[in-house]
Length: 550
Image (cartoon, rainbow, N blue to C red):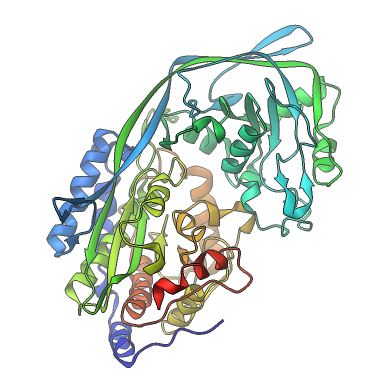
């Protein structure tokens, strides 16, 4: 791919930044912002709650104090600080009832234990499924371009689809889905959408920690609170009435009692020849009411207008939301504080905005975006990308930050996923000036590319990456970095214990922000337009708008 050509002016600015120490980006600011955002007072930063109001007020106050300009919705010809994001909010009322009937005997399942069911997002005010047959449909994938169809014409109307998480290639590492690296077909969002397209009354995704990349607690905590979706004319087209996960042991027992071996059926599902299997003698029932209403949440948008080409935009982004208040943990804590996820990314965007506001005015505009409802399915970024405040065709690139490491510096960095694009090449070249190297996503099977807000832009052709902290710590090496990551995912990810810690130095983030500042500053002071690799699935969408950039 063609390398980004940096103007002499941009290079001079960059080298000046490179010579600065980490005080350019203040670890104390980062720590203070994360501490505030993840405090009890912010109630877990749930959309459409008092926690959202506090979060918006805090972010706007910080941007104002830094000297940024508002970059949000226009009102009476003037920009405000926010972009209104209309959302459907859906919550289960009372205690839902779930029953599986096996050979005439009914057994109850409890929400959060055997099953984790989401409040319906298909527009219904209640879910009433009675004795629906259970049909195992493998990985629930229909991919004509790969000559793959798990459904084989089965009629799922009035039935419950039982599906596996991730792709058919996950266990073997080879096949038609790119090996270990997850495709979009492996994401739970796709599984729900395809089940709706197939006419299923509901879907039960079998949870397994390896292919899901997280444990049952994460599934439970993410699916048993209020759900959100963008407002759709026909929500039932992409959401079946029931969207739920079940524990692996529960699935194994269902298969056994239907005369099937779970592992054997999984092996068959990894082949193109797989055919749907009815779980004979078994049916599923679910009953609960749904409190649904349309609410308005908000993205926060701040801006440094460009001095020469203000209609061309570089974006830094992070989601401000977390899970709010939900199921208590063992200590009784019900607030999901979200310090790392994503207090760190939010603090990083704030600190980048402060430095840009104090520095030389860039030739292109730089926008700082804090998205709502990422935890509910990238909804804030999806809304922005579908209703951009600044044209996507003239958006140079998006640099997203999500769940950064609050500890010390590392020798490397990574990004979410394994996409190939000029923007990554530029980041790699920039990082080398700080002796930081690129490491490929260590867990491509986790599907991180589809799990952060940059994806909303990527699928529309905008060059976009989600920066991730490295795992090769200066103090402790790969062993220390991996130990931290494993501990965070197992004990803190999407759990109340994701809290600010006084011993977090934030020096690694401060160091990495110098690199991200240099990357964005160079883009904002150049005339170059990064693109995707020629064989990227996102290249065509970008090329379709090429005339807008001439």
